[in-house]
Length: 382
Length: 68
Image (tube, rainbow over all chains, first blue to last red; front, side, top):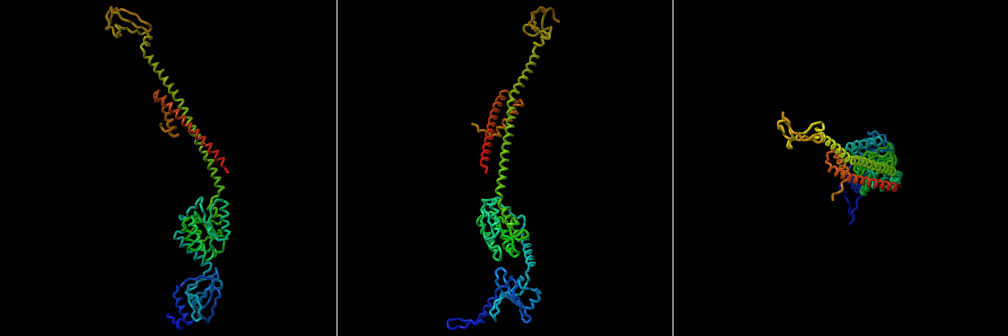
């Protein structure tokens, strides 16, 4: 659209109509978007071509005029009342005759609790399909974190609960608190930023805590960006959001979910007193073990020593017995023993006589007996 | 100078000596030499055990003193 200006010397001036046309033309280039808000001041007249209402942001009260062709509006049969939450699909528009800006609605959907829950369910299915909530993604929490990050509202009871419990269990714990918005449209972005900031500070684990609140209050904790940020967080995240029955989607993406802020604190730090007790028991066991091992080695050594001491004497006795045995056998085998039984040895010129033919009658022989002996002469040979 | 054997090595050697002596295979000279070596090993092992016991007592009393 060409907008004509009038030149008054060095000043270019637009007529109101031209100005409005220009703005309207510029606005028409903006994209069609979805806008969420509460219906107020619904105005509908049979003689009007359009219905009008104001969309109000429940978070900060910001307002936006909306128009919608009446036939289309009636066709939806939504039976809307003031305060109903809706999603409007439309385009910004300038009503040129009056220079009034508004949203030209092309489509309108009620967005009550049911629709809200359905949308959340769809998001949940989508993220689950991507494996964001899978059990094998869950990381174990550190046993003794060097530094704990706590993301919470600035004056939240949740913050106090977490800090009190952590300090009671482990007085030396190092907690870095990141305060942020925990409610409203700015909360998801702010929480994500705080998570990242804490990660840069080298925390070992992060607790994301928020006390109870209405369904709407807890909505930021189901925000897709936040759920993804929790799943992608480089350190394990423990969530404690709302009450037991609330399950915001960030709970499903977290590495551990606590039912209350103080339960979250119990998950991230061990109980020092209990730890010391266990350590004590361990040490007592250690001492008992060492003493037992010592006793066992001592008994084993004593046994070996006893046997060692016994061994040479045993050896000696065995040797002596063997010697006695050999001596006995030696004595049994000596010729003397044979002579004792009445035998005699006959020698002729020193050689033992074994047959009658070895001597001649008249020959001199020596006879040896068990006791002494005598000389003799051969009478006859046979 | 040979390096001192570990407790386990000394214990093992001692038990091997006892076994050899008890089997009666060793000649007398060797048996006497083995016996002497066995006594040395026994002394060494016993000293080590006594030292270990002293250490346990010391650690236990120190741990006791450090209790909060």
